[in-house]
Amino acid sequence: MTAAAPLLELVGVAGTGKTTLLETLKQRDPRLSTDATIGRLNRAELLFRHTAGFLPTFLRGSPRGRWLTWEEMRAMGYLEGWQRVIGDDRAAAMVFDHGPIFRLVQLRELGPPLVASPAFAAWWHAERRLWARSLDLVVWLDAPDTVLLPRIGGRDQRHVVKQMPAATAVEFLTTYRRGYEKVLGEMCAEGRFHLIRFDTSRVPPEAIAEEVLVAVRRVTMPDRGSDRPQPGSPS
Image 1 (cartoon, one colour):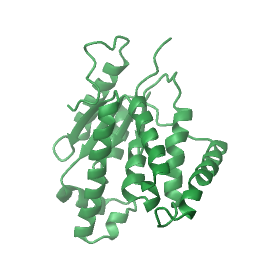
Image 2 (cartoon, one colour):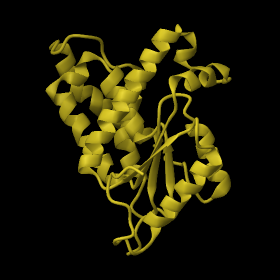
Image 3 (cartoon, rainbow, N blue to C red):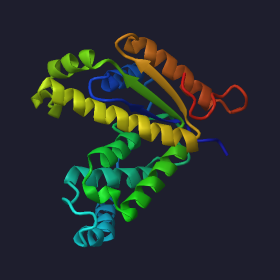
Image 4 (spheres, rainbow, N blue to C red):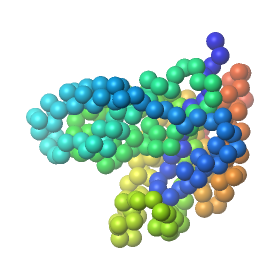
């Protein structure tokens, strides 16, 4: 049976150029897929199951705090729902922006006290392990905060950082950056994906895209022997 085409995720804090890189990749290779749409019935079923599963813990007040926001509930639905739609017979490489790693970081770093409960932690760790074994390539983008803040401020898109004082904005970016460091460190230890990192203040998107497509071709090769990058190894 032919192996499925690679599964990629672009990760990094706001302003690092994930959207720009994704657009560049699609221009270079129009076959790349970004379609991981979860059907309404699947979304509704997951919302019901997660509410029923974790509401008793919340109501017992252990630990105390707010309930999950709608965005956090969506993140949980994405983590499970995407596994149902990525398939084992992908004909073209699939790329995530704001994908499973982003959702894992979002929940653990910014979620309510509920995420520290044993029940939620067990679910979260199971999803992390599953995605560590599902992803083939992770592209980690970063840049100095002195570069990121003007980028974010100059974009048309809304972003919470735009409303923050500079010191608070740096703290927000640092929280996410540390979250990525922790989650990716854990996933590298238990996964099989290839991790490559770029400083987008130094490397233009065209050069990054070229290296990413080379990595995609490598993991697409039928022979995944000695020429394949080692699992979780940084470049």
